[in-house]
Length: 256
Length: 256
Image (cartoon, rainbow over all chains, first blue to last red; front, side, top):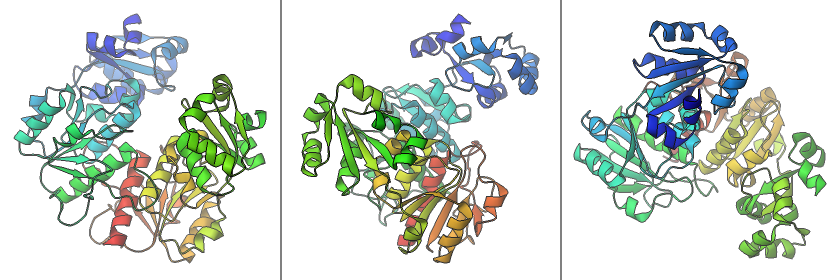
């Protein structure tokens, strides 16, 4: 219990290389990947409501602990864990595993700080058919409970690289033949304009911080810097919205 | 003070037809529209950091109240109001004002409950050059402080209709020549597929609830129901991400 509760903190997650999956969706996804779920905490209500989860966990020989709603509330970071929380082993992969898989679409998150944004970009990258997501060393931890929840299961769906030095990650991705496109609202080149880079080519999209975008030393790492056009009066797009437009533009071009 | 603090609650906002704009961006946008800001609360630090805001407010004859950081913390709903909070009069417009303006791109939010999502869709609609956003009667209040903050100023940029009965709003928009496209993840027709509706036509996009999408009685109101394609393993896209892809697809088609 105490060990599980400590997983709310990044340092403890990294020490135990474990994180919490909260709620039926995340726990269900964890169960689908053999060896990931190592412990399951349930309230009686959770057990009643999700008997299939309980059965699968028991069937895989995973230790199951029945706890009160009060104990569950102390364990879970989300407001509505719906009566079940699982302890999972880290599932990120080394950079080399991603690059050697022949990826065609990758999202790279540089200095993204908001866990909700990070999880949403992960979910969007998954939806857009990306082959992997790289979280730079300075980005939020994708195992943060809010990030896990915002990813809506996508953390379990595609290869995620955590804590990669950005220069190294970008060089490795370029080395496998990907063009590197940085999304930056201040760029002169607009997404979709004629004469821009060929989005049908294998691409790594580089996304920056919610507030201050990408600093010039990171922009230099990209082959091209592109902005999602602003047609109205908004100063900028929210990071997750900009990422959705960029990733889908690439996904669409690769399939047409 | 007490009156301002009560604006945290929707019922009080509606009674006084006033809401709170928190932080320099929202207050600055309010100041740009004459007659919108009716009172300004500042901490000494806020006054020092944003002297232009203080000067403009005073120049417009708006009552300015200096308050302590503690009082400010009790007033503001956001974690970091950065020392200034303004009281603003409602700025939504009647449905007829939007429809008579000859709109070409409109976002309609049906049953959207999360204020952060609602504000983000408003910001994205603004960025995509939409001519207005309609919040249905069952949707979250766009004057909610989280919605205002997530809109990042866009609440002040484009006509917003609040509390419109959905059937009426859709009929009125169609009456002005807009096609009505519903975004729904379960639709068979995929955005971008050949043979779909002409996105260069004036369009009202209908977006549903975060969790359960659009019920069948609302889907029937649309001319076409379309899904953003899911190329990976994600079950669905987050509402704001889906809205970004749909609104930008239309914005792009209208300009090409």
